[in-house]
Length: 200
Ligand SMILES: CC(C)(COP(=O)(O)OP(=O)(O)OC[C@H]1O[C@@H](n2cnc3c(N)ncnc32)[C@H](O)[C@@H]1OP(=O)(O)O)[C@@H](O)C(=O)NCCC(=O)NCCS
Image (cartoon, rainbow, N blue to C red; front, side, top):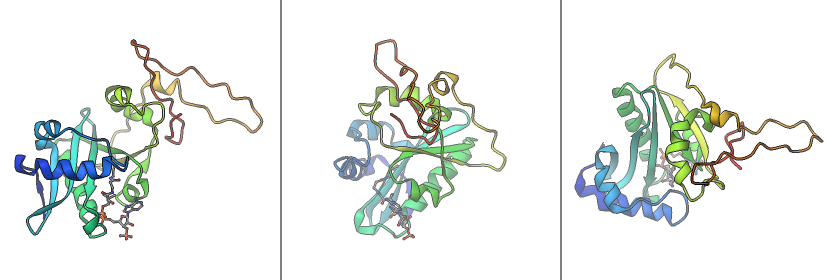
């Protein structure tokens, strides 16, 4: 069964997320943060046990993120992951959001659910809001994947501050002239995003 999370699910969600955070597959989330954002979460329940979770984060009127997607390895491949993606997508649709994205290392899983790899400059709210504070910001190994939630979704606009720093494709033999990495006011760096979504 897929259902909205309740506060009493927070510890089970925390355990699931941390199992994968320990493998560097998800970012860790403090238990207090899970309680605070419990209304963002959906869970998969089997025989009274929480076996999966996923959260919706709305970033803009047209853009939302699915994050903290985790399924207990004991029940992997039973469709819980896919159902959680659909539940979060439908929730985003109910709010009138037209695009859903994820930053992930399992892009092939998301591609099976209608996502395609995307340039992070389209997700600038996330880049400026979260990635800028992430300890992995200059060494991010996640891929951005994006899926429309409605037919004829109006295209997302890229942030020119980020596209200005997109690494251009290089002709063979051309020297590498990379633009400087954008910096925040406190001197920290933002990831430079290549056209294929990889960052460097
Ligand atoms: C990715 C994950 C959520 C999938 O959950 P699940 O319940 O097994 O997913 P489903 O049963 O709906 O779908 C399984 C399908 O996805 C595919 N899949 C699962 N993990 C995959 C991966 N890492 N790479 C490619 N495909 C993957 C499976 O091969 C399977 O395909 P099949 O139906 O042809 O056999 C789960 O493996 C997980 O929690 N992974 C660790 C945490 C993680 O990476 N989360 C995503 C962060 S954005």
